[in-house]
Image 1 (cartoon, rainbow, N blue to C red):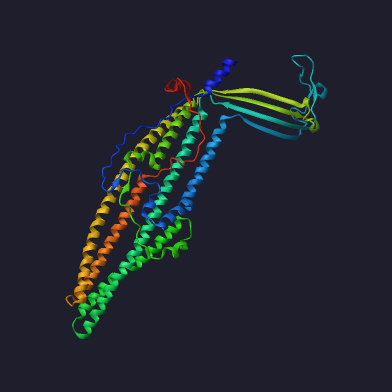
Image 2 (tube, rainbow, N blue to C red):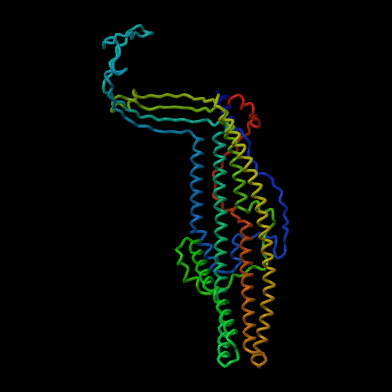
Length: 510
């Protein structure tokens, strides 16, 4: 008996099917583009580098109240509950059943009365004692039960534990999906905020530019009145004035669109942030150097890569479940308690009843179902392995692309800064000459309009630079390794000697 118990203990720690190991993927550490960046670890709270208190405030609010994030976190709770349900199958299942019935038996039924004393002419003699049966069953019968039921499926070949492994990996993949949603929401808040400040500054510059055309139109009207200008020049400047004012309505609409987007991202009504965000503010600052870390860190920082890796682990555990289905299942069963025809006597010692036993279920022929299930699981595992490799390649491509776009945006901003600087010098010199009477007002206004145009281009490039930086930070991933939801440890399965090749099992049982 002791040897049998030890054998059960050994088999209880055995799990057929492949044991999962994280695939080894060689990713070079060096980036293709390195100017203006450092290989220091990128910050988790990357938005702090913009030095804007409102931006930080809205990202923190979105992290707590965004609807998509709340949905993702609810999915984590669901997966956690499913993991608990699956883990319960490792333990004996106990139940208590207290019931009572009152039964009315048919007079013409098979068990109402048996035996010759009741007029039954059939042979009712006992084959053991040779005595005739003479049993009269009451037509109305009460039966009361107070029973404990116990059952335990012994996980000899690890089917339950492989199922728990799969659900555990699924649970962790849902956590990574939530992290991916979090990263996207933070980036969306930053982009919407940059769009807002860009639209506000653009509206200011457009209004300033339109004021130069208005001033020039006023001069042309006076010249037309005194005969120094013709109607053609007047119509031309009026057309230019209308052209300068045309983008303003769309820009005002863009301001409100960005405000409403930010309100939605933090889970509020559209008008919530209007009063707080309408006052003009400049674009956020950008860091002088951007920390991007080493490229191979993407494998642990990117939640989409970790998500794909967990899906691969889930599929691998699914293969183990399919392999274990070829083996028998053994269950231990027991029932004990009290049973009586009379309720007051239910809990007397004479009313005790019990039963115990075991059930062994061995698949013999399933019409190809088990083989098909195993083939499906292996195909799923192969597909998830490809998805994992693809996620790595896509992550590197996205990060390299965003890094290059950011660097090119920085270069464009530098050129636009030079243009603004030199145009500012032109306007400054022009004003001095205008005061001295060396330059007329029309020429000075042309210089002012050129400066406004240069500042608009500078604004566009700076906003593009910040947007590219946000995209770069998003593509670098987050870092939640120390903040993951704690999970229940599942004992590592012991590899069975014959779990590498199940082809013979397939032929014998399916």
